[in-house]
Image (cartoon, rainbow over all chains, first blue to last red; front, side):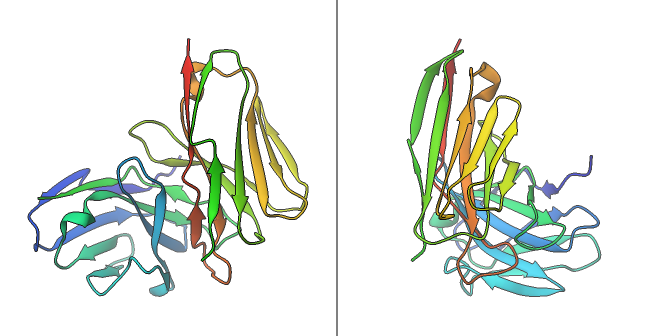
Length: 114
Length: 113
């Protein structure tokens, strides 16, 4: 069964550094998402991406965040200057279409900012 | 702003007992989705409910969507240790599109063998 994959599984970075989290969505899916989950808390929507542009973003997704689909398979989340509070699990998800279809989540990247 | 609330936050049951988690939205939802997250894992889609009053079953799991499309429940009959995890409900953000989901805080289920 096709899966969403994410790399790395764990990223440790120093405050102020840039990080890029990578995702490979399921190949025939058209919508891509990033979520984050602070340890023990709920899953929070960051951004959705369709047709090579951002469809929606939450208030969490400020100027420090950006997303890109650099080629036909990868979908990346960049955090320009990490803060301690960016430490969380970041999940990528994809779906065949919009809100009427289930989202398939990747295994996540645990980001630790020190 | 729009909120999706779940109760209880935690539920500890003996294996074989039933379990129910409740989800309430501050706004009417076009659909509601349920996800399960095992400890250390990622959310896994369980089901989507779309119609008012809809009831769907998956083996020992029964999902309901309220008549007003603002609340939902997940009931597990005769829990097993494999049911352990956190169960999240999620609904599309009101006025949003493209799958911007608002998740509840989840109900963490532990099952004592």
